[in-house]
Image 1 (spheres, helix red, strand yellow):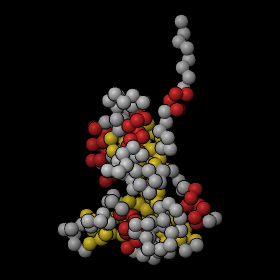
Image 2 (cartoon, one colour; image 1 turned 45 degrees about the vertical axis):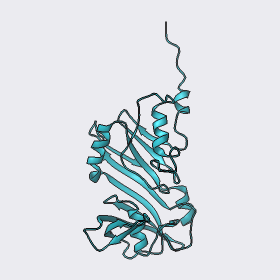
Image 3 (cartoon, helix red, strand yellow; image 1 turned 180 degrees about the vertical axis):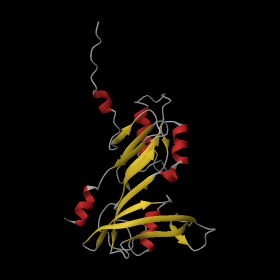
Image 4 (cartoon, one colour; image 1 turned 30 degrees about the horizontal axis):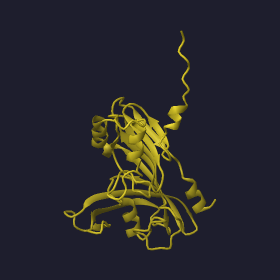
Amino acid sequence: MAQPHKDPQPTKKRQPRGLPILHEDKDILVVAKPSGLLTIGTDREKSRTAHYLLNDYVRKGDPKSRNRVYVVHRLDKDTSGILIFAKSEQAKKYLQEHWEDTDKHYLAIVHGRLTPKEGEITSYLTENAAQKVYSTPDPAKGKLSRTAYKVLRENKGLSLVDIHLLTGRKHQIRVHFAEKGHPVAGDKKYGNTPLACKHLALHARSISFIHPYSGKEMSFDLGMPEEFVRLLGK
């Protein structure tokens, strides 16, 4: 006797709320993180994180399930964009070991007009006791950090910049542009200009990497957020 056709609805219901899944297979999960959501938990916030939501999602509501996701990399709470999680320790290890070969592009709206319009910002970044990151002239004290950029558009005293992240240090993009005198719009921590927008105008737009098991190149591109379009005007 033919089995009754199962309604696919429950899987749709189990999508993590407010965290769109761009790709899922047995090894990895690729999601679009909204601004305002932590990647992983802190002392103060344990459950409103991408990590928690995806753990709950892969466990399909069963707290006894041994399924879990592994953090490969992070985005700042206020940065939106593409996040990759692994579904096994081996996949996580592979992705992290090949992280330098992973191609990552961000979009940012920064204050002012940059000169030159294309270039690379390089410095040694370190962090103080107040968890503020800054550049140091001493290579022994900081980590080499490289940010390549290209201005795409200028309007209303703001610049839309494509950023090719060559190293991935904490707050790297925000610090590099702030120290250049062009803080990211909406940056309350490193900006010293009136806020042009409520949210930090920094978006992890695209990523290309080699899949840990198939060996195929995977590429994802979210394009430009609506808020950026509104901010820059037509």
